[in-house]
Length: 139
Image 1: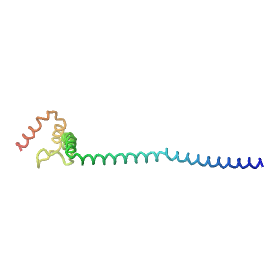
Image 2: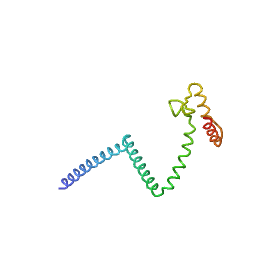
Image 3: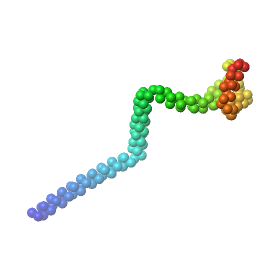
Image 4: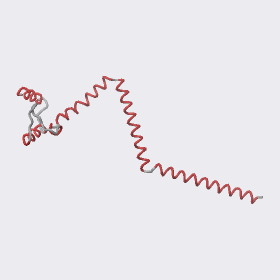
């Protein structure tokens, strides 16, 4: 009878060992799938997408709550961007060439000289509106 009890406990131990081994294999497979490059990439993409969507929703909510503040911030960001864009020579912005005056197109060497002067103009900002008015008056 004692032998039968030992056999039972050994068979139970063998079953438990097999069950534990199967659990261990499952856990290792699960860990392997979590650290796979594709899984990490997917997880980072999901995190970035969720975070950016949450940021945009928060930004939209705050903009609706404070419209005047939103306009002030937008103007503050747009002004430096506009100044930067105005410093880019026109030939870079257009494939057709730089137009010094409406209807007149500068090409070849004159075009390059004009674009170079405009790109590297180092005069103070205060003088630029005066030059522009002078050009408009001259026609």
